[in-house]
Length: 302
Image (tube, rainbow, N blue to C red; front, side, top):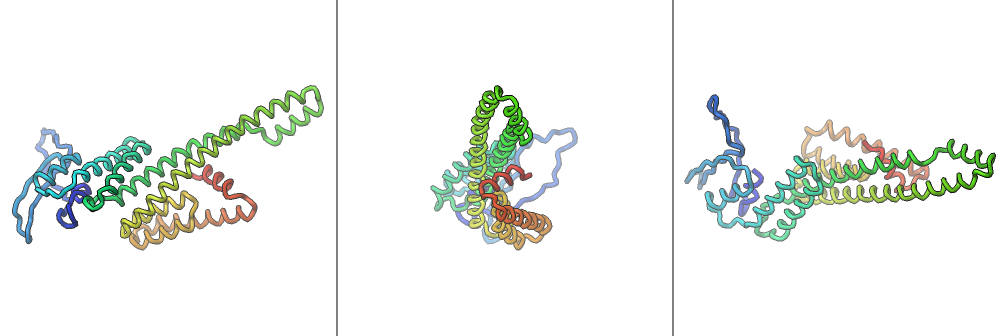
């Protein structure tokens, strides 16, 4: 449905209605149709001028041929076909392959075409593409966080505890001949741990960088799809991941206004944001720096 609308030269030229056909294959006969069944009706003033039925419509190229050849809409820009092709390939990479980086690259190409040919391709679902790219960036951020947690665990496992340091100090004091080797070992371990900590900082920066991209895309999508509740929900989710909790709740409120059926889910999320913000405020009042607090919460977050 989305691809047909995207190829419409102007709003209202192509109208799409989904339907479920009750026709079933005969017993013992395998249904070889993989794609959708499309019925095209050309109308004028509620009068049907022509009709055509096409089976197995499962690619963007087939939709483009239906629009340009069967429906004879010559004002369709060929770049719209390329844009939608990259868009759906990105969806496949994200949802079926679980490869957010590949999906982001494909969404970038789709958006580049949409931006370059705005006048000719005004019906392209730029808002939907931005939402999908935001989802891909969220998935990339989640992957960075998994690695981040492993790095933090590795560091905490190698840093000596207070009790261990006390024993080493007592040993060095009791056996001075061992003190040099003990301190050399501690100095060497300290250099190794400094390298591990730099890896942690780098991975955390990559995590936040992905979240920033996701947030930017989702906020832009709210401008293009202001009446779509899921758009405001996604923006709230991205802001929450970025620890912009008060702002996140503002977007959740907008989503709730558009779709009251989301009340239970959104109320739970807003209460969680409020509790987390209270925790952050208390931690800052106790002297925790913003960077340290964000890293600790990002590692601990479920």
